[in-house]
Amino acid sequence: MALPLSATGPGRILERLAALHPKKIDLSLSRMERLMAALGHPERRLPPVIHVAGTNGKGSTIAFMRAMLEAAGRSVHVYTSPHLVRFNERIRVAGRLVTDDALSDALDRVEAANDGGPITFFEVTTAVALHLFCEHPADAVLLEVGLGGRLDATNVVEQPAASVICPVSIDHVDYLGPTVADIAGEKAGIIKRRMPAVVGAQPPEALAVIERAAARALAPLHVRGEHWHVHGEAGRLVYTDEDGLLDLPRPRLMGPHQLDNAGLAVAALRAGLRPLVPSTAYEDGIQQADWPARLQRLSSGALFARAPDGAELWLDGGHNAAGGAALAHAMCELEERYSRPLVLIIGMLGTKDVAGFLAPFAGLVRAAVAVPVPGDHHGRPPEDVAEAARTLGLACTVAPDVGAALEGLAAHPMDPPPRVLIAGSLHLAGAVLDANGTPIT
Image (cartoon, rainbow, N blue to C red):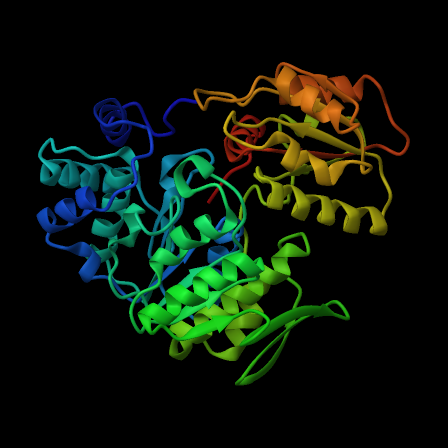
């Protein structure tokens, strides 16, 4: 996929940086520490930061926190990755996507400060975000870890208002280790001395590691199921902690897993930024939160027009075993509301566990279609994805792209029309939004 900025200005700088610096992951803090010093330590001049790590749910949890803070009238900087269509999506300055001009100026400043030193592309872009955030006033910063936590470029922030650890599961084993406990240890590396640590639902082996890390750091713990609780009841979201109960609307974001993400967002704000958020803002924010490619329903656009008449079209970037389980659960909920045959259009990267992602869909899916992930993202050949699906008992064919897959479904009508879920990769999701003409604002 081409770099998503204009051919001049920041687009040209990003192309140069991508050529100069390795795309491969190289976890370390030494390069960032050198660059932060050269930039005058922007990481020490930020508004209060909530730092978010975890395997699944980081982006949605940040989306809820941003919506709740903005419902309280607060100005919020946000850094997330990866982007779906345009690089600018990664950086929100006081609530707005960074402009091309501001991004170009910041890239120039960071590149000059780096002075040709060794650096990775993600480190450069993280430095750009931190530089922009310290130069513009805001009430809070929401900062998403790129990979892991302990050695991630974002971990130069020394005293966040709260460190948040979303659910941990198996992913990126080449970099984070082969077990859930190993991965949890890397995620727990964002916990800072005496600063609150807010923890979502975890496997026991992950929670034990996180609790030990918090104890070493003397960090106050706020653990789901111990210090705070969230559940759905009578079409509402009920959140409780030692300070009382909040009776809130269900999130607009689809899927039962979003109840957990919304609860984690409330817990994080109450632990780290409580004075900024009155109770009414939780209610307003939970209804306003939006996060593209997370069970996003597409109801118009160029790709939608190629789908079977009357079909539902859903898009999600889920790509690991835990993500597959959450999506399958969400599809079961939709099936209970209105029954349709479920068709899965799937494209995955070569580094991902295809069987682990697909296993929860066994018995749910009428048909599956494997497609390549567009661009230079080392996608798994769709023939391999289809073979893994067939091994699990899923009837799976291959198509050259999502549009062709939808046209193939349209050529063989189902009664009732199908519920189509496109999933397996955020890169695929971004390409779908781009091809469909769905804007991200």
